[in-house]
Amino acid sequence: MRNGQAQKLLFSYAFRPFFLLLVLQAISMVLFWSLYWSNVLPFTWERNPISWHGHEMLNGFVGAAIAGFLLTAVANWTSRPAVSGLPLILLCSLWIGGRLALASSFWAAVFDFAFWCLLLLIASNEILRAANSRNYKILAILAVLLVLDLGWHCAELWQPALQGQFLWAQLWVVVLLVTIIGGRVIPAFTGNWLRRQAAQQNIQPTLNSMPVAFNYFDLIAIFALILFAFCTVFTVASSITLAVGGIAALLHAIRLVRWQGHRTFSDPLVWMLHLSYAWIPIGIALMALASTGWISNSAGIHALTTGAIAGMIVSVSSRAALGHTNRALIAHPLLTTCILLLNLTAIFRVSASVLNLPFLINISALSWVTAFAFYGYVYVPILMGPPAKNC
Image (tube, rainbow, N blue to C red; front, side):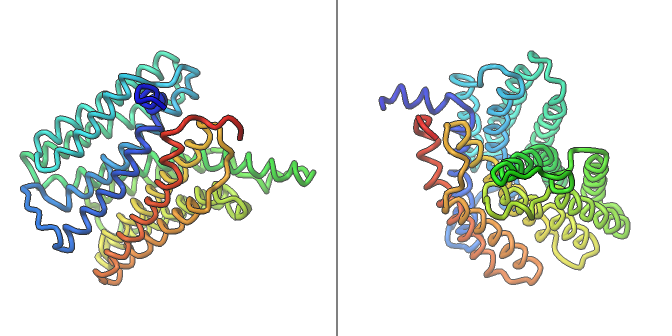
């Protein structure tokens, strides 16, 4: 394939370049952080390294996933042509600029702000022109992420003490996005799979065997999550935070059970979605316990970021890449290994915080890097290559 054709193919859909960048960021960021944390890499900088690490997780790694998924999905939501070509190249360039501006707070802020602005502008253009009112809330969440990222950079430049609060808020907005998107795709994909299984066995699926459709219970669970997020960001009294967190964790655990994941053990592409979402009630529960001082906040943070967010990113992006390149929706063994390693990563990292065992941090980093190396081995050729001619 010639260079011009390869570039045109790469920027024909947002999932192609951004899922590639996602893999590169996942491996390089954690390797760099692990070496720095272990004092192997003698790197000195003026930026707060822990705050930077959290920011790169939420705005680099997750930002690439949001851009790749959103701009790919918006074509289906609006029945408009996929965002491609020059706008996509510019968006990727701004994202890369934000990552390369490692030692400069100012230029990192410029590139990151421009990235979120352009992403919101492109998504708004597509959704508003199609009058796709169902997804206006996604634009609102993008706008909030833009404001919070700008706030974090302003805090880094002029008021460092506020960086933590902006990171907390960013984390909860991303978790909220996972609960909204997860609430759409998990029951939908699970229901489709269960119906196919029933058809193959020539039986009629019962109402009790199918995922429960979105209803007021889901809204209550999401509201409880938002209320708990408010408690953690603004440091509400620990007794209230613990109670609200316990209720929110229970509601999201029940929500997950209602999606019938226990019936999907034979298809990794389906059960990995449920397994990833399971870390949301776990993370909420750990954060609630942390509000009392019994355990470190780090346990809940990494349950949500490594277990839920990263797990959902891998689960959704792998399915999207297969579907949009005309490939069969079958999990490669290395993809299944990847998701299992990510869950081990979360267990190791949470255990490191709860049990105060620092050596588990490096083990979790190794597990993470291996997981994304497997993911990249399977999906980089898919993301850079042409669609399959036959499924």
